[in-house]
Length: 284
Image 1 (tube, rainbow, N blue to C red):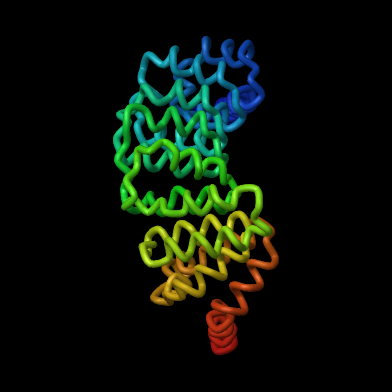
Image 2: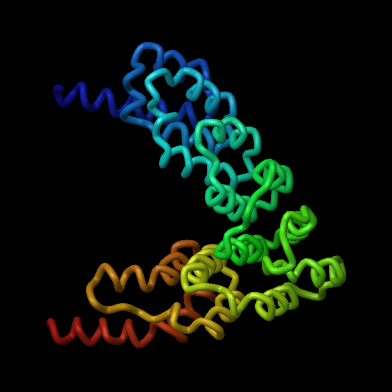
């Protein structure tokens, strides 16, 4: 393929992405009708259509996918469904779910994503005919919803009565009692940590820390720092592990949350940054 042909194909791919985002079915259909193999090069157009709520584009891409470009790529579909759940795209989720085997673990994973937007309609759909809550998600689902301040979602999940009292949903009674009378978000965080802090695993803690940094919830970051200081330890074995260790700081900074960024630097990462300065001076 010549340089000009490569450049032309790159331009066409950009058009596919643009039309997927804007919902321009007519122009997208014309491109794909003449160049159906192009989808192999731009599979993420399905993701862009989902992210921007273009249900008719998603439906067209799925129904015309005779080669299984999308429908046979399970990892792609799971990631897109998770995105649709996070964005509250109910119709798109319903279109995509039949193309994957909805395991119990996936239901839990998608419910955690739904907790980000608080859609009780989507939650009801994902609960389906029954679900067994995995311990990791019993903690992650309500706390994620809390970070995003979706209190009605928490109550809805509790009210399904698909959970036993041992499933760590003790908070529902307290939430109902104080509903509409809570003076500040602090009360919610304090109550939740009293119930949950002893059962959060390291894996759950890391996910919650990243979500709190993404949202800029300083209070939650402080509580994690209080109960789980080891989550903030920096692994300096090599540059890759160090970067993974300071991911919460990078997330907070990239999302423009100055207070959280400064707190993390002062309380946890300042010694590590000083070490980097010393290394630079020695190298010089």
